[in-house]
Image (cartoon, rainbow, N blue to C red; front, side):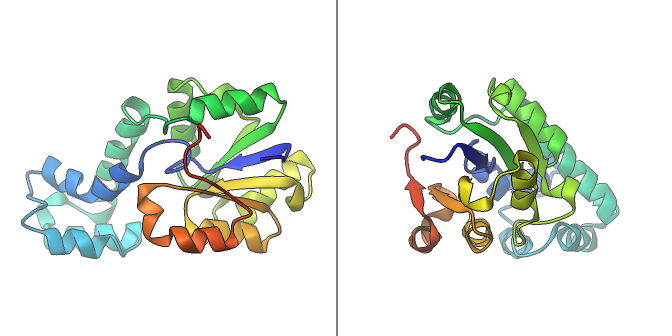
Length: 212
């Protein structure tokens, strides 16, 4: 990366969390003494839904879990525990961040995760100091299907999109940044293996191993 400004996604890019997200519903059901294996079809269906739709479906199927809002709070508590206690950096991330910092590259994080959890996780992992600021889709009331979060980074740095590298593992996020004029870096994760070829088509650069 030759850019002096870099926007990093967090989940699946900086931290090894995509397996946690994949297993989250099953983990929640097991925590409520409900077999995720016995309800595998329901778990698969939930993967296609938004949070509000998913919690409504869980409440309908398992009334004893409470209201959709109560279920959402319980899942949020499970998520928070993982971010605060056990999620780890992906291989090579710490070295890559240290190297970029030594070169005076400005960096920030742009994530769909809530900002307090971004901060808590990266502080626990000892890399928070590498970033100028943190951006959350939740705080900005947006998603990565629109460029607002990336444009906010450009605004704060007072730099044109073409001067900023955006590192993402998700195809839809890469596509959004690419269309908005940012330099895009596709980051490989097992969760995007099926779309990796598509990611490479729109990315200006790719990273498979951050130690390379």
